[in-house]
Length: 156
Image 1 (cartoon, rainbow, N blue to C red):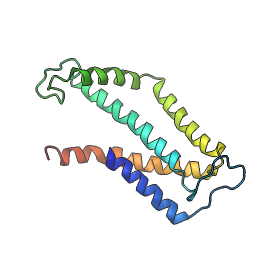
Image 2: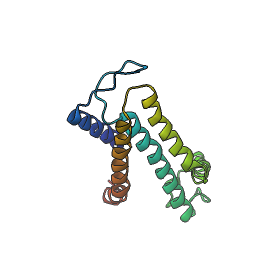
Image 3: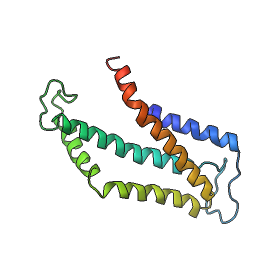
Image 4: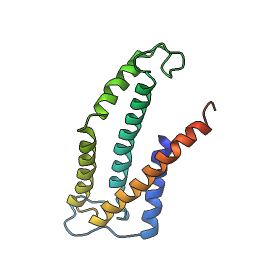
């Protein structure tokens, strides 16, 4: 998770340095420095909240498919140490993340964070959209590469 978020920050910084787009000057509600394009908050919120949703949802479905949530004492389970709290937490969080209202709420939260950047006058609309596009790219890359990395580095 650390590498995932650190990589996103490095990409955002690199793209900002490449484009060197100045921030809007009209109607700015808060003082802020640095370059405008892409919006780091938009990219970060997209990557973090949607990535968290995907990770918990995927883990929850994998554990349910293998009937891991019903058995804490399963020797093959990553929770075989008797860590009942983790299993109960995943059961509850996994249930919440799989309801039909969670995904639209997460998208609404991400959109509101993007809107807040416009409202505060620190980004242009294209900055926010650019942040979402970069976030989509980075998240898609990780979703695609993570299963490969897990099997490659398993047991190391």
